[in-house]
Image 1 (spheres, one colour):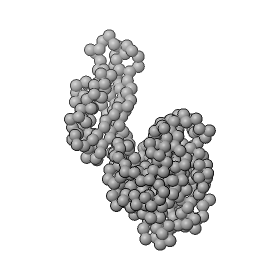
Image 2 (cartoon, one colour):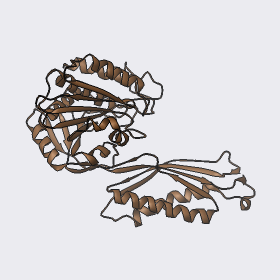
Image 3 (cartoon, one colour):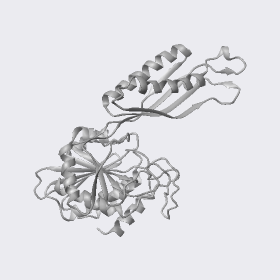
Image 4 (cartoon, one colour):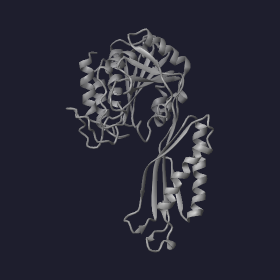
Length: 371
C-alpha cells in the first residue's frame, strides 16, 4: 500500500472526529473500506460503534490481535490544515486518525496475503471516554474473536519518524477521573454566619488532597492527584451554596489507586462535618494500567531490530490508556510510534508527520506475521 493512499485515508478520517460511542460516520467509513477488500479470508462483525475483523491464517495455530482506537476529542482544531475537522469542537488530537489508517493499511496487506497465524483487528470506540476496551472485552461478540496475543500502538510526538519505543512491565499508569460536588447553604455576603460557604470548603479541600500523596502514599511508589477545574458561585456578593471540583488520579499500581480513593472519601466525611455540607464523589472513567508482557516485548524488539527502523527503550509515564483492560486478560504490549510533532498529544495544534503512517503499517504487519 503506497504512502499516498495512506495519507488520503488519514486525511479523510481526520475530517470526521467523533466522541466516544458516537463514531457513526467513522464506523461507516471503516466498513465501506473493509468491504472493498478481498473477502475470501475475512470475517467482519460490529460491536456498538466499533468493528472486529478476523483474517483467517494459512495455518491458524494461534490468533494475534491488534487494537486501533477510533474516537476523537472535544477540542477545537487549530492546525491550519486544509483538511481540518468538519465537526465543530471535535478533533483527532490524540492521533486516532493515524491509528485507524495504520490498521487499515496492515489489514489491506493481510487480506491480500494472510499470515500463518489468524489475525484480529479491533477497531475500538470510546478510548478517550467513557472507555470502550473493558466492555468490548466483556461482549458476547468478543468471545468468538479473542486473540492469544495482542498489541497496539500510540503516536509519540516527541520521537522522530522511524523510531518505535516501548518497555517490558509497566508502561502507563492506572488512571481515574475525579468529580467532587459540594452542597451547602448560600446567602448574602453581609451575613456569612448564616451560610455554609462552599467556596471555602472546596478551596480548602483541594489543598488537603495533596496531603494524600505526601503522607498516605509510599514515597517509593508514585501517585498524582490533579484538580484541573473548579466551579462555584454566581456573583461577587453572594456566598456560594455549591461547588464542583474536576480532576484526575494517577497511580503506578491498582492498590495505590484504591488507597487514594479511600483517603479522598475519608477526607470528604470529615469536611461534611466541619463545613456542615454534603459531598458526593464520582470517579467517572477509570482505566487500568498498561502492563507489557516481557516475552512479547523481547520478541517485538527483535522484530524491529531486523527492520530499517530504530528501537528505543521507553520510560514509564502517568498516561492513561484503556488498552490496559485488554492486556489485563491477554498477554501483549503497547508501543510508541514516532511522529515528530512540535505540539503534543491532546493539543489543538498537533500535526504528526504523515511519513510515519508507512512505518506504522510495516511494523504492525510484521508484528501480526511474526509475533
